[in-house]
Image (cartoon, rainbow, N blue to C red; front, top):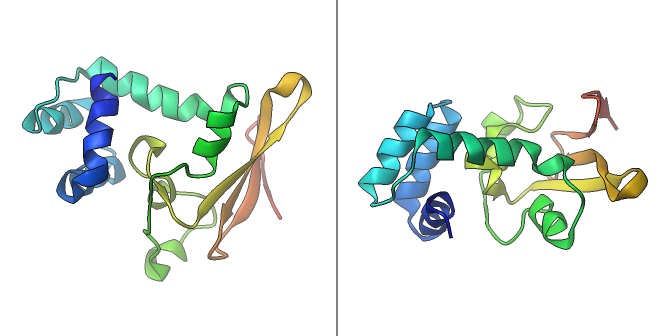
Length: 147
């Protein structure tokens, strides 16, 4: 397990660490702040590790669809209830509160339903707030279609 995965595993059971990661992520903190926080908890990360993890999180939706991708897209086993009507009502698209730090900890109410194109490559993803704030598809060309 790499250091970033180990950090996220620790955050699953350490609410203080998860709160700090969420604060850094929501604030758009750079890799240096994430590296420093990881070091406080005994993890050795580099800015490059952070960039790679962010890149992997950003491209997860363009890989071939596999069973584990489907589970991850649906929120997997690790979710948090971040529903706050005062925050959620401000957004018509998924935002940080929906997906969490490195898109690793989805809100309990966030769902993604993949659609596949030719060859099993994911071409679009339906993003759904189960509290009713949004329901849309983001295509491979970046077009947003609300439905």
